[in-house]
Image 1: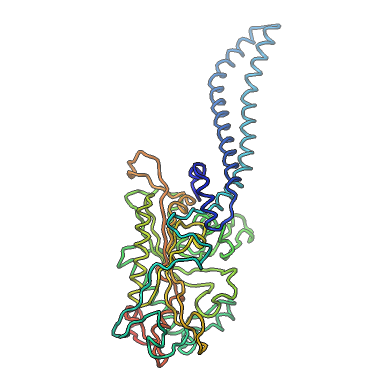
Image 2 (image 1 turned 90 degrees about the vertical axis):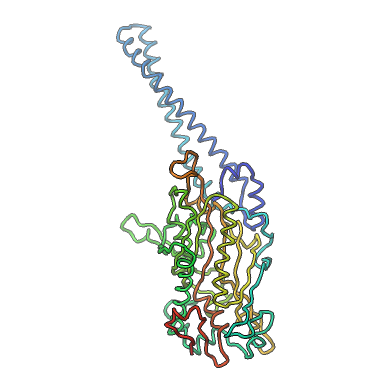
Length: 478
């Protein structure tokens, strides 16, 4: 959620930000409702102050009047009784006015809060303006250098055949021939976009997850965490996945089961939701910042609206496992930017250790989504993707494997996650934290470039050297 004060001070910034993200929001309506809410709140405060003042002043006077009435008679008594009745009626009138304002506020706030949740975080000024993914800008690319396994390295500007000397199989052909996955039985059990990983396929899946998790925790000092993957709606709203992404989440309607007290739950599409929910509603000791968390979790995505796009194989599926990194830091733009660069650097180091060619893509404003001020995608080279050549075989293409987001205070404001500058002894007001997140590794999607890049002419697949300790020393599949 954006800061209402910043919206009031500079509504044009938020209008422009929403337009750049191609998100329709009624800023004028929000401003009008916010102005009315503040007016109602001001009236409430004024009436409560008057109520308190009246209570202090009228009490003694009412006591005097009650005593005087006992001694008075005739017209004097009637005058005193009228004054006493008026004093007694004023608190009731004030209370009635306050209750009416309470009702107006209760009717106004849900609609205002609903609209506030739809206002996206404006993109940073240095993010290129564009309509969608086609307008993203390539920042850099890394090609695998020569190694004992690949004496010639790998140049993505040349064909796989030119690099390796043989025509490659797609990951679909490799998992079929090496019995690494079973799509037919997966679909039988769970419907489209479902699968089973079998044999060495499951071993390789676990190996890459273990390697990535150890890479972040043991080598780079992130705190390992286990978090729920079934959460309340507040967690989804707080992390910015609702309301805009509600159609992508699996919904568990506990409230309809009966028994009372049931709250609907949702399956998370990323470990980011659980990691960010850990400190919701807390004031964090500034000395503990930045918090650096890593989790490995099963993720669920409905992929609504993605029909016909990357439907075959392991690329776009409903259930997968992901190692995620989250950083929660102080409210400082320079620090957020530095962490963004650093978190991308971890991923680059990981992919280079796996020998997987990749590129960095700067996402344009139209591809950021509501919650990001900036986002950089990482795409790995996949020989089995892309347009078909004259031999009807794919020419290879990059495919997204990671996404690094900088969100400033957007999530933390929704989650009410704050810190007090100066620590517990600090005297100033609390500040809302900043947050960032980035995929470390998602599997089985990452198995696509591993299998396709490490395949051999005889149909076998060489296990990347860094994964062999996690495969019991196995060097080759097939």
